[in-house]
Length: 309
Ligand SMILES: Cc1cc2nc3c(=O)[nH]c(=O)nc-3n(C[C@H](O)[C@H](O)[C@H](O)COP(=O)(O)OP(=O)(O)OC[C@H]3O[C@@H](n4cnc5c(N)ncnc54)[C@H](O)[C@@H]3O)c2cc1C
Image (tube, rainbow, N blue to C red):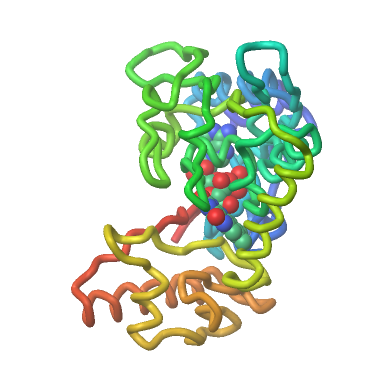
């Protein structure tokens, strides 16, 4: 990074801006090289200030939540990585329906557990999904028939989509054009950041909510492998399942180094310990080629590749 820009960032962030930080431990797959610069933010205002300053200084950045939907390259990341630890969560049960307001760095599964403990239904589908509320809004995370678009009342977004100056405003799911595992945020990398979100809930009982969550978690345990992964590697193509296609192409259990296409669910790629990002990428390419050759179906990544490849 250019010296004067770096000085401006160091003046603004002090010791919160760390140099050469290995990213593997910030990711669910436990792989990836270093971030040249990593900045921890602990509140929504810190996140907004950081993003505004980086935009002003014209320094590219990436917001990292739980790192559960990204594959970071072995060479690491040259952009500034903002690690989002803004985690305040509060419930409001006084209105027409209950809502939870969560900062974008709050863990989605934890928000779901807190709602369950209060007897508030609506987020059972999210029990067991790793990552943050911000990552879940950006990628419209979902499972078991539910998704973020279905719960979202409003998301607070800082953006400069179509504007010169950063704008901080509330947006609905339709304004965010949330589609299957995507949104306006995801389709405009670097141009918008989720600061927080309010999610619609319904009054129920702790027992009923817990029972439904437990059922979903048990289903996950039966059908998805444990171990370090990124969840589903590919989006399901229309009318089919990526896992079924990869399995039918004969790739269940395929290995490169310590990376493996799970023997339990072929859309999960597991790091058995010392896998490199390059090993996982080799499996990704292998799966894409085999499925295309056999079925003429192009597989689109659900996860995102970050860093220098
Ligand atoms: C075991 C396992 C199971 C999973 N099961 C599911 C599942 O059932 N359903 C599902 O949908 N997903 C699933 N996932 C994937 C993942 O959990 C979700 O995509 C999750 O919502 C990602 O959130 P995150 O905070 O980890 O995002 P990250 O991986 O940190 O980031 C993902 C993308 O979102 C962007 N982003 C993150 N935070 C923000 C923000 N505040 N503002 C703007 N952009 C942001 C990042 O820049 C990046 O582009 C699973 C993953 C694992 C490891």
